[in-house]
Image 1: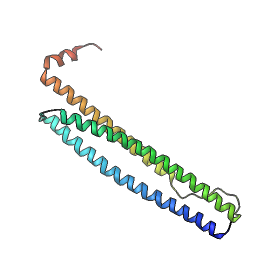
Image 2: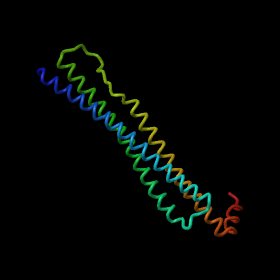
Image 3: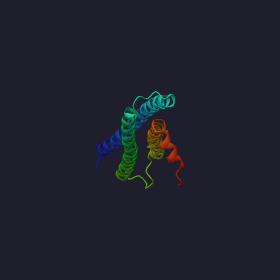
Image 4: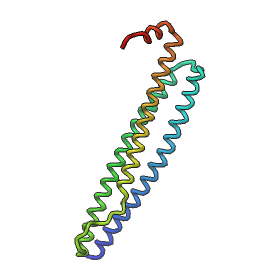
Length: 165
């Protein structure tokens, strides 16, 4: 292989780095927006529940279902992005090894400037945060349901509270 092949392999490595940097930036921006939307809507519903101004719990159930499903999709996205970053790192290592082979460079570990470990930690933490949000949404729905039962049928709620476990 000639010098042109080495240039092409180097260009591919550069493209993988640029692609990965762009993707991590977009993922973090998406997460910030998504987490903010979760917290704002959750806060509005929690305040309305505490103030007792819900006319119907149907909107809470629908919002909870939507946010639970979307948070599940977000968790899947985070772990899929993590796998994609790992595949990109492996491809960069493979390309670096080919370049070393073509240049007859001494056999050393290829230098990979892709911070996969850092990206992986970010993706795991984002996924865990989304899981906590999902659990919080489910808890809000359960608490709202219990509160509506206790206000609509206090005698039933009182009997349920006295049941031995």
